[in-house]
Length: 291
Image 1 (cartoon, rainbow, N blue to C red):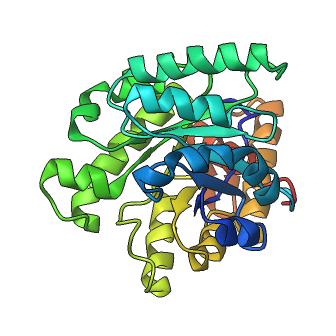
Image 2 (spheres, rainbow, N blue to C red):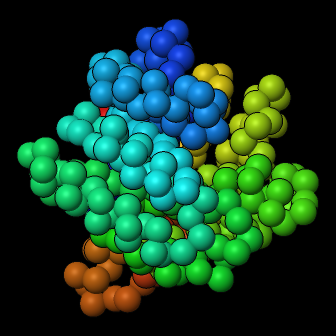
């Protein structure tokens, strides 16, 4: 996995056209803010929202967070949204309803051209693919490998559940979330998300338990729709000081064993071999800068 991919534990949706939400966003503590042009913006307000993206990106990023933009489908709307969104202040684009790699490649080509035209460093704008249809599941590997800009994928729980004819409950969302995660790992990109509905934010105790599980499953961050969810995501997707110390100890013990001609080591009463070391290295790779 590319070590240059940023760690965004919490990505909070903000309706791009609602000034009062955009103005306060930077105080919420998220790693990134998604200026939404899609579901939270009514059709009549789409054009106005596009015109607010550049200023909105600067406002949400003023405390050091990243600004992200979620665009619309179909492609005609995607193209208009990208024209409005691509700029030095926007770090990534969320592509919704991704069912195949062709859509990601088309967005990549459009962004390539816009960055070149606007004097933005090539590759500046990353992509996150939102998987929201059962039709995408057989193509997850194709999607995950479709663009060097693609930094991660996430399951859109509500839309996906609707296409599957199921309720967005944890038991139903567990398997598709794992499929997305496995495809991300095979492609070396980041798995985002959690196996539950994104709309359930009132019970923070249950939400925390869900995020603990998500991290155990291998997810590294997630989208959220309410400011109260931000702190939970930041806390639960950040390894504890004890976990960091243990991971560093595991690596040090294994490296010492290799210097002594051994292929495994003992650390704190457990055998340390390559899979254990790989997990420790992955944990340290995904640390926020301050950790």
